Structure formats: C-alpha cells, structure tokens
Length: 621
Image 1 (cartoon, rainbow, N blue to C red):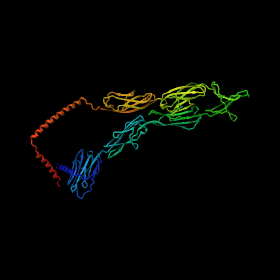
Image 2: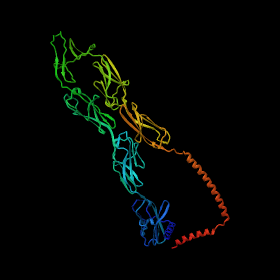
Image 3: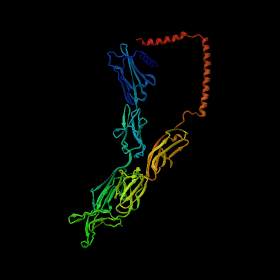
Image 4: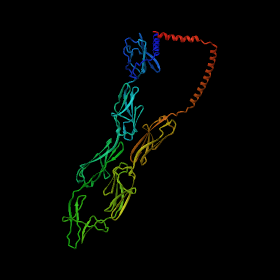
C-alpha cells in the first residue's frame, strides 16, 4: 500500500511542474493486437542519470501509472512483464498489446539538475484483418434487366474497403452505388461489361488483404450480327454451291433462323449451305439471331443472291414471204434467265419506231411487223384485284414483308405511308419491281397505314394495309413511397411502354406477392414489408419481359405514445415534484441547525495546512 501511495505522489509532483520540450514524436502510433510498440524519446543519454522517469496512460479520461523510476522502479501490476524502460533515454517498450491499451501515453523526466521535461503521444491498437470474402446476391443475370449486390465481409477493426474490377478501382455513377462504408457494392441494370472479375481490398493501419475474385455471369445479346457469303460474286450460275454463315455476339450463344425474301426457311443453325442452287432460289437472304435467355432478337442486313440459267437453244421462226404482199412476225426464243434481246439486220441493229396503239387483250409477245414502214405494239392488260399480304408476326425486331399483289401487265408499283410518299428507312428495302416492301428488323416507328398503288398506261388500282408493330415492355418504372410508417397504406404503381399493354407481376425480396395488376396496395404495413419491390412487365404478344426495382423502408411511427408510457410520465412527474418539496424542507431545517451550532474553522484550516505539509515534504530534495 505504501509503494502505491508513493507512486501516485511522484506522478502528482511530476504533473505539477512546468512543461518542457516535447519528448515524443507526433502521434498517433499504430500497432496491432498482440504486437509490440516502442515509445522512443528524442533524448540522448546524459552524463548523469535522470532523477525521475515516469510513464502513465490516460484511458477514458482517467490517468493511471505505468512505471515510475527513481532509485528504484515502481511498476503497475497490469504492466508487469509487458514493459521495458530504457532509463538512459526514458524510452518505453510495451508488449503483448490489447485493445485496452488504446490511449494517450505521457512521460515526465527530471534531470540531475532538477529540470523537468515531458511529452505525450497517442497509441491506437487495431485488430489485424482476416477472413476476407465476397458474397453475391446472384451470379445469373440478364443484361439491362437485372441488378446485383456484392457484399464484402472481413474480420478486423477500423476497416477501409475498396472494390476492384480487374485491376481498376470501382467508382460510383448513376448505375453503381457504394454503401455501408463501401463494404456493399450495388450495380443496377447490369451490362455485359460488368462481368468482372470483382475483388474487395480491405485495409486498416496495421494490415491489408484482398478477397478472391468473383465473376458475374451476364446473359446479353444478340448484337453485332453479321452475314457472310462464300464465294462472293454478283451472279451465280445454276448448279453452283453457296455457303452462308451467321454470327452474333451473344451469351448464351444465339439460335439462328434463315429467311428468303422475308419468308422463314426450315433451315436453322449458324451455317446455311445451298447445293446445286436453282434460279428459283434467287432473292434476298437474311438471318435472325435469337437469345433464349434474354428473349431478344437481331436480324442481319439482307444479302442478294442472283442465280442465272445459261443461254441456250436460240432460234428465230420465219415463214415464206412475197414481196409487197406479205407482213412478217419474227419470234426469237431461247432457254436461260434474265434474257436481253437485240435484233440485227445483217450486222446493223434494227431500230423500231414506237407509235400509240389501242389497248388489246394481253399477248405473251411483242411483235415486229413490217408493212410499208415498221412499227411495234405491246398489248397491255388492265390492273385489277390489288391487295397487300404480310409475312410473320409484326413484332419489333422481326423481319416482315409486305407484298403488293395484283393482276395486269406492264405495271409500276408505288408505296405510301400515312398519306405521304414512302421514304425508305435504313431497315427497309424494295425489290421485285417494288412489289415487295421488306422490313429487315421492325421498329415501333414502322407502325402506320401503308398504301400500294399499281398502275400502267391504261389503268391503276390500290390497296391499304394497317400495320401495328408490337413491342416492349420497356422503360419500366415504379412510383410510390420510399419510406412509410408501420400501419400506413402502401401504394406502388408500375408502368411500361408496351404494345399491346403489358401484364404485371410484383415480388418482394425475390418472392412473388401479386399478379396481373399495375398497382400494388397494402392497407396495414408492417416492418417485414421493408425491402426491394420488383415489378416485372410481360407482353404476351412479344413474349418479352422487363423489370424495375424500388427500395421501401418501413419504420416505427415517431412521436406517438401509448396510454402506458403517458401514465408512467405522469407518475414520474408527481414523484419529482414531491421529492423537490421534501428536499426543500430538509435544507431549511438543516440551515436552522447550522445557525445554532458554531463552525469549526480551526479544524478546517488545519486540514489544509496538513495537505500543504505533505506537498512540501514531497518536494524537499
């Protein structure tokens, strides 16, 4: 007991002297649990030993001694075996550190000449980090439709978190959020560029480490579709072999469907081989890639294949003639395709003079007739029975042909949309003498009323076709409260751009809670209603889905008290008032008693004098 009293008296003496030059470097000093720290002073060993070296620590605003060294050492029991004092410089080594060693450390030194110098520095103890791991809410994701949460877990204290995508640090933007001290990474509406690998780098003042990488599986595409022909040439001879290949960026790999002039073929797969091709197989070939995970399509630009039959068996039919008495019709026939004819008289080209003719019944040939002078006529059939037919379903992304059919000859075709001449967009082509309007990949803006007008020199006819492009759902949005009190009514509304209108399914934290309504309502909310609400929109026509998420927090209502707490407050108020009255009466009576009794001033002064004596005796060398 006497040793401890002396220890405290010496600390009191030292702390009461004038402060000198700082002995310790600026803090804080950082150290790990179980480790060692040395508080090095800035002093060099003096010629004569220091009279006093004293170390203490302030923890939770309470100062306690560590060691006081004069002619002997006084060590606090808690530090026995854990410290080494280097008395020549006043430095202190502290071992086997624990979290309880956090605090402000102070040293005071009195030299042989009686001068005192002192210093202080802060020590911070950290638990080294361990067991770093990353958990992912889901690794099976769909581009643009899915969101993902990555959680970083680690043991240790005062941790800092940094997320890495490969070797690059992840930064926040409108799709990427960091929360919970950066330990939680949330990515909304993922793209296939978000696949990772992701790792979590954790550090504190005494250690650092990085988790194992995590990759996300993100389904995307198809996109960047490409159609290749081999060999590539302007015309192909009947009997040739042609290979077509279709490729697209997609995960999982896309399924390929082939089309000729917008009409679906039975062939599937990324390769289409045409063997011994015939003239009837001429046309525009295209391929459509479909991803059965994302439910998305993409159609290639068409590639034209023109197949020609070789010219053969050319002959001219002629009969016996009498000069001045006969007329003649020359008929040239040949096998082959896409034929062009040129008439020669000896080596000179025959030039025909065009004259107006009266319409007659259509004949399959044009005649060159020679009388006193040459003339030519081509009979024309009137236009009739014009109609428009469509191929495939009018769904955004599909290939569709509008074909203008009609009877007649020598006609031209003209297309209009919504009452104006049709301007071809980048997804439209015309072929077969403008009879076929082909949409390579339908857009929602292609909806409208189409008119086909067929005309020739003697007549015309027209037909209309109203096309509605089914699309969506897209731009799914949820409106409603983000936070709400327990017991209040929750109203959330979901909307999406879609033709026809979408149907809706609601889920909370991944569990389905409602079907077939764009509005979700709950009259009496509970704390368990907090979480992420997901609205999934479905277009039954396109077969496609899209979703949106909404965060809701349900909290206890603040400010209201039930009857029980109110009664407790009233009772407590009465007790306080009663206590105050009783205390006042007691003080009044006490004052009267003290006035009647003389004060012991001498005894009080004696106490202070004794205290002064204690300090005087302590300071005397």
